[in-house]
Image (cartoon, rainbow, N blue to C red; front, side, top):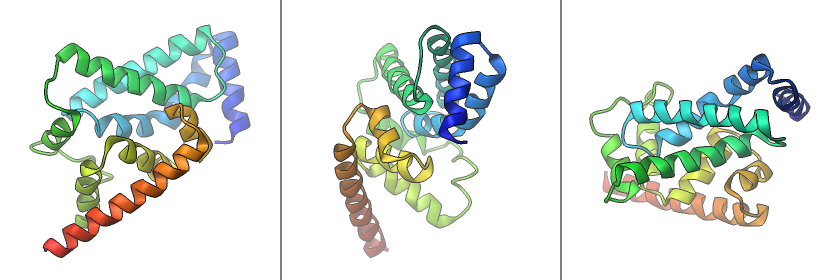
Length: 182
């Protein structure tokens, strides 16, 4: 979807409370936001619940305030919802432990479980630092531009480029270790 179309939809939602315009934005970002949340919470059901919360808060915000970038808003809300999730549950172990637990006993999403290589990539991604995983997912799975990622993560575009470079290098290093261990 073009940026002009998105801006038009954002205008319609803000100005008129247009549910059909919001539905288009929802359809565009649903898979991306759910995938982003899925990597950060222990269970698939939690990801579904938190994704719903993101879009409810998005609707409330968009109908009361002007928004220029839907992606940035949704990712920012997702980060806050995830933080609230862990705050409410008073989880004492780090998120990385919860991520490791989420892959045990729960189905991997259909689009990721198609091949052994993709499963290995998923496991490798879970071993990366959180900020590296976030920028890789946004750039290569969600196909966001550096500018969009910088808005979503509230960092400069240069910082995002450096993070992407470091994340790719870390992913490559982890992949090489896994292949040498086989």
